[in-house]
Amino acid sequence: MQKDTYGLSKAALLRKLFFSMLYISTFTFGGGFVIITFMKRKFVDELHWIDEDEILDLTALAQSSPGAIAVNAAILVGWRVAGFAGMLVAIVGTILPPMTILYIISFFYAAFASNLYVAMVLKGMQAGVAAVILDVVFSLGGKVVKEKSVLNFVIMALAFCAVFFFNVNVIYIILAAALTGLVRALVLQRGKKL
Amino acid sequence: MIYVSLFLSFLQVGMFSIGGGYAAIPLIQSQVVVLHQWLSLSEFTDLVTIAEMTPGPIAVNSATFVGTRIAGLPGAMVATLGCILPSCLIVSLLAYIYYKYKELGALQSVLSSLRPAVVALIASAGLSILGLVAFSGATPAFSAVNWVGIGLFAGAFFILRKFKWNPILVMSLCGVLGLVLFLLFPGFAPTVGG
Image 1 (cartoon, each protein chain N blue to C red):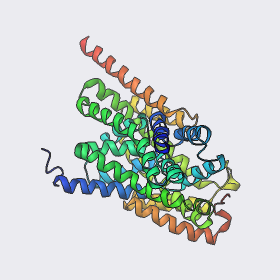
Image 2: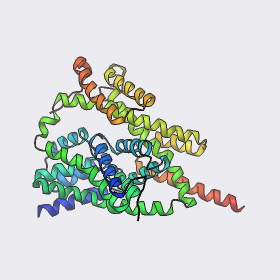
Image 3: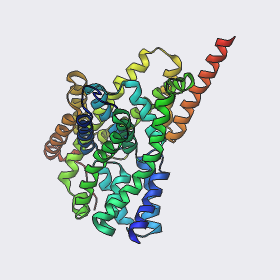
Image 4: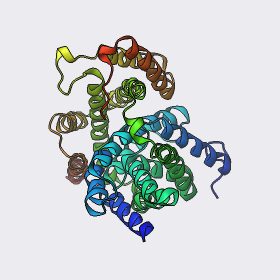
């Protein structure tokens, strides 16, 4: 039996997980990477449920699996924190806010899409989202630089150029990085044997 | 039966959209506009606009929107369920493998190569959003610099790095400030179509 995880009973843990995801999902505008930066701030920095390396691993998994990144990430975090029940709770918390909002908007979507004040608020929030993402990037990127691994630094620089300047499909970038890691493991293993 | 075809359509969207967000749009379009004619092309364009303006993954937003318009609330639920079911199955399997084998040397090496790549992907997503905020037109030119957007971003970024404020609070403040500033400086305000 899993209990007293992170000093909480299972029920309290699930409740906390549900409301965290509900809160994050309500305020996460934009693509999947946005929700991941918010999840990092919540689950890594604030609650300390997951460590920094792990959230990056989970991001890579969420990104390379079919479906929405936000839902995939919720599944992984839920699973990690509280098993199968955690997964269900995290999924419901993640999809409930967009479902509710879109359900309501579907009745008067034309007026919403062409409202100037809505557009102004959203543009302002977009500036905030960019700041949140780049803040997280500085923390995570600083960590990669501090590792002083030339290979990891090169992977980061190449991956950035490929996706930002050349619009290379993200899946190929993930595959190439994974392959690089595999080759490194093989080379290191051979080095040990010699 | 309409529920079955909604479910199956969005099951395909969930299963074949790898990489989330924009990767899902052409798939949704082919199911919803071309195959089933549930929405006209212009309604679909509105849907994409709304999906970008509201929280949540585009696939979940579309499933709710289309489901509601075709078959009410049950339709929204069936379509959303179809869209997240493939993720649930595949991602939980991946989570299981990850936590079972993550101590393995080769997998360790693969993961440590993936992490810098993931940081780069997040950086690229953040910079793309910053580009939308910093320039009014489609092309980055000095005449099109959006000083309100840049000011909001710079302020938010500074507060996040220096004072570690809650990101959701920072983002909401940006929304409110955006409304005020765009009303004061209408030259930088976003334009709305439709």
